[in-house]
Image (tube, rainbow, N blue to C red; front, side):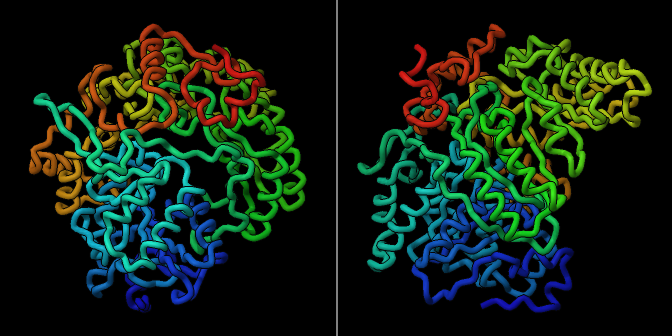
Length: 620
């Protein structure tokens, strides 16, 4: 067992990242469990402890008597240096023990720029990075989360992936591994052949990938008779009855989302064509307000938090929102607990709702028009108008709000300079709305922030075939916006084009990229999502060292007939539907959301959620 001596922790910036022992952390006797499970989040403590998915898996596994799930996070550079100096391997927070001999290490794949941290964590654990080099004496390494839908760039690292929602899948997996362990761990291949029979389990070593002379994928074919030709994702059909933790760990130090988070629904009905989450989490499913109120009451009482946030992709689309907020206010007003509603849409924004939920504390409001002109908003199927934006900000300013953030993307398909300049012009119109209110009726100190990120084409979206703007083009567009901002009262911020470029490479990458990722870590790359560490030149050197042209993955228009690296994965939404949406985007034609009309995307096959709201079947 590792003892973190005071002299080690005194040499790091934030010791509470590594001590464990927080309120509601689960401690078990290792000798009393059959399975040691390490939930690995490839980022620092403050990010990891804000992740709702970790809370769900952590507590549902620890509800089992035969399993102990512990947290394993990426150590910051100061702690990594101390670990190396003292001969320490990667360890779990609860027990402080090295994870090298755990049964399972499960990595959550939230963001492509975390891939270097996954490799670095395995190296710190003294666990072979490549799955082919890990025998039965090492932990099984699996991945889950949104990036698992195209994890081909790191496929050679993982024994298997869980595709889809893991609340049931993880228990089925533990049962199989527990039986295999009891049988003496005779063969990892035999174990994987049993695991692959669980719906949603993808074993990359059971598939051969071949390539055409031009570098595109030729075929993805199973090489094991137990492996299905297509792997289907798992979903929780009855989301109201899906496991929700009734207690959460309360960190010692401050974390990014330091509050109670209520997942009110899962999925989205809107169909924004750039949004991967909106497609891969279909269909939209909701929890009942009464269920959520019970969970909220338990989480507030066990944690002592003074804020609660409603979590979903589009909170204002939750059909039970008025009933839920009324119920939450009864819980929160007396105790001065704040209530926040992220993910509000401009087209169904309600000042009455905002005034109701922000009685305790008034915060800024963030809207996401995404594009600067109506034409481009139609291309991306945002389905909001300029009138929606103007009327909503008018309500805000008249209601006393003066802090407004507007989020946009640049580099969207079919974008022109007129669309780019439209971002600055739209911000100017929002400022005009404020000044149109009589001086004696408006609040002082207006603050408008315009923020742009760079569009990255993602798998399983309508835009997965489009090329990504070059870095030079993104810089030019950022400059164009800055030059056209009409007032010093409007602040402009933008995302770094270099990290967006790297994200674009790995988002639509294939297995040939794995050697590049490992090489980059050998050169010193890690924490690529952090400005403190990201080194673009080291990545370019890694691409060069491994003979990979990164532009092949970003700048190239893909054809419909091309085999995509993720074509053997089924998320429910069909490729034919995505092609149709791609064509409608080129024509700037919109698609109604799921509650207006079913567009036959394919998700109805799950027989759940919004797809079943209309009695009598689906619109043809």
